Length: 316
Image (tube, rainbow, N blue to C red; front, side, top):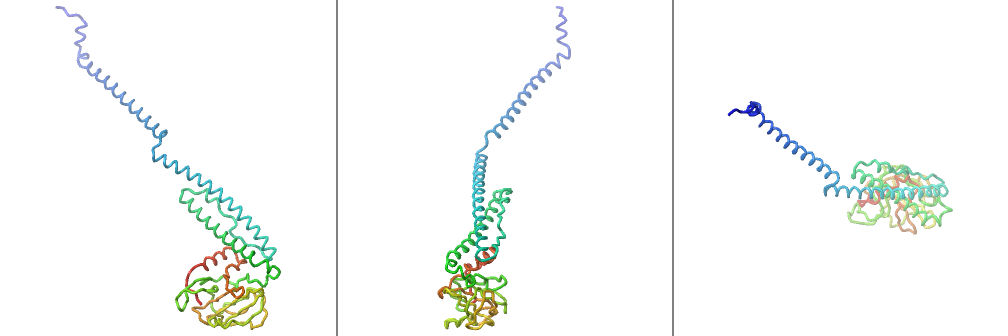
């Protein structure tokens, strides 16, 4: 039987060996293409899911961020209102000091730094800055309270005789307050007692000055533990006491002027160290001298205010 030409061509070595390989290669290419397409589509869908459909954790963080932004905006608005109020009070203080005390009102920390808030890079930074600003606000608020409390209670009756109001400091330098007014620990008995003045920790022989004009009078007999003591009667039932002095420079009955040298710091009487014990009395009842120190620099005033509040052992 004679075979045709096409039959012999089918027996050619390329058809016998390469045809199955080409077929397999085509199938592999198709499969790889399908897999690559599937992976590409999967990757694309994953990206879409990540960016379009956030996780629960991302949703929570986004919500917290939105709340923080809202709080931040409220804080900025509130702080602006507070700054306006404090600036207004500073202007009023300046008017009062110029017209009543004939001096300038010193406000070294007039501008509160709000730029720090806008530059905060994290929540902890922002909270720290807010805390600092709240501290400044508290300081200014306390200072304003004492200024206006003094003006309200003491000026109406004494507006024409300011030199007789003990609004000055008994010491020229800003010595630390060792103990303040109120309940303190007795230096000898170690029990709680009422400390009727404030103790300035000044060195021996530090000059002491009258905080207002008046007349020097004899100490009460009940003040035997005060050592060398000067009492100045300023009129209007107001008097000041300067105790534990090393030396007195003015005698009983002598008229003294505000700011005049009257003695030196010492350690006489029942005393637990060199210091000046200073009192202000109204109708012979001790009051807190801190509320009268209104001519001080506001920062020094607030420093004294904090020192005088500390519960500790008095020096006398």
